[in-house]
Length: 235
Image (tube, rainbow, N blue to C red; front, side, top):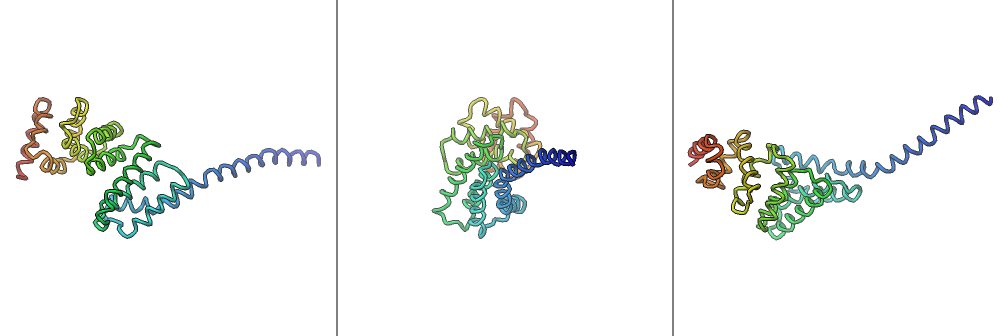
């Protein structure tokens, strides 16, 4: 009996702390689990918009509330980033009243900053920040800095290349030597990966290829010639 009692006590000595530790882990992780569960419809709606370009107009207020509730439970960068994207969708939604669009852009900007403060390595969030400030006609330096950070944190991200080229071309006069080099790099990467979309950007932002010629005539004249030929077909 004594041996059995000692065995039981030994097992309890191990199991009780493990049980308490498991309970502690559950209590700590519960808010994150609750927030993640609340955030699922937000993630689904954002992904659907990116995949199908289907604006969730009627559900935006509810989705924004879900994202805010997720942040209330767990102050995670992903939830701030999602809320930023929802506010941006609201700013872009044709059903949003005109007077509410600028505040929606600013809310999107604020949540992008909140997300980036918690996790800086987010190239899409940096580019969203630059894009919002560009749309709102903010000072060039407030646009160029996040534009550069987007490149630093994800230079070869194919889905971001053409928007980076577009913003870079729009602010070429304000770029320093580093910025010019980065724009040239993004221009060539976009040409190699998404040439059709890039030609449309050039047709809109640099129709006569004045800036593009300065960027490439000494470093990559063959690519420049190809761009000129492609652009000529759109004229």
